[in-house]
Image (cartoon, rainbow, N blue to C red; front, side, top):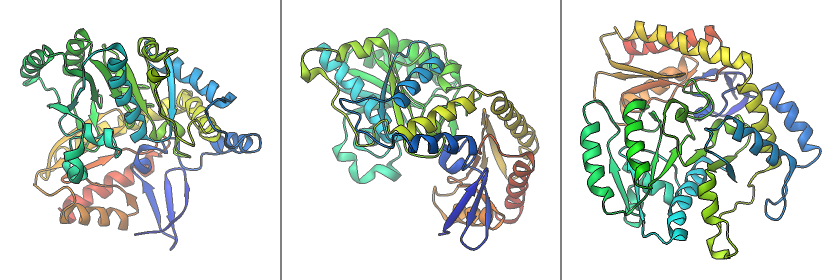
Length: 399
């Protein structure tokens, strides 16, 4: 366990003078670099005016502006914004929206659909729809009802559709929650947009609400603002957090369509969505998010994203030929390779690799036999080269 005392750009500094390239943007949050001067200046100004106020019966300019700016870049069917404070609660709210939507409509739909191997957070609804028992095993007897399907491939999509057609006849499925294109905690497992699109199209026809968990994939990581931008059928609900607030302070948003909002808009108080957190729409977090959105849409950051994408492609061509590499995959700036050996998710090899990278001055967190990179957009070419070279040495010296 290392004590980190400072961070700047893509570098973490520990208490003993060690420096580490943050190859995963501190769990995919600090995409514009740590302690970004532009964001810090904006937040500091806000701190001097309004630091925190309850977001119930009150509103404030940063929340209003952020809502307006988010709507501009979200898929065009998204019209309403619901604030919370982390990725788990963003998906929790999405799940509650889907279930209560049908409840308010008088529909008896209480089942959720999810992908096998998905991960959506650590609160109870989020755990229920997650498919990684390594995290959720002790709680599984208490979960809401969930049906799971495999992620689509060219070989299995026909079987998935056949199974869904059978289940959809029961009209019991309220919503489908999915990580579009990339399942982060499932070792960056990727699926193609075409297969997902066909599944979403079928579910949409049967009034199943589509909940896109973009907590990890959102805000440029797939090469577009959202992974859902790669897919024709748009979600009814989108869950966002992590790099939403540029890695500075916690913030989450769950957006939805006008149709979903209308199902809750009533003089009957029981039809309202009762979900609120103390730090919901914190003004400082909203300003950090607004600053991040400005940077995301800037010419420089868009160039940086394309630069990192191209750099990963070139590294992929090289490393794929290594005898210890089984497969490689890439989606935008997300790059992953699988070793051609079996190992436990948190086994000895994973720990040896993690320690090796840290000794090399590189912060990566392998998952089982998967090594992945998801670095800040502002990472330099030299820093990327250091990461690549460290991975190559690890394959030769550790694996």
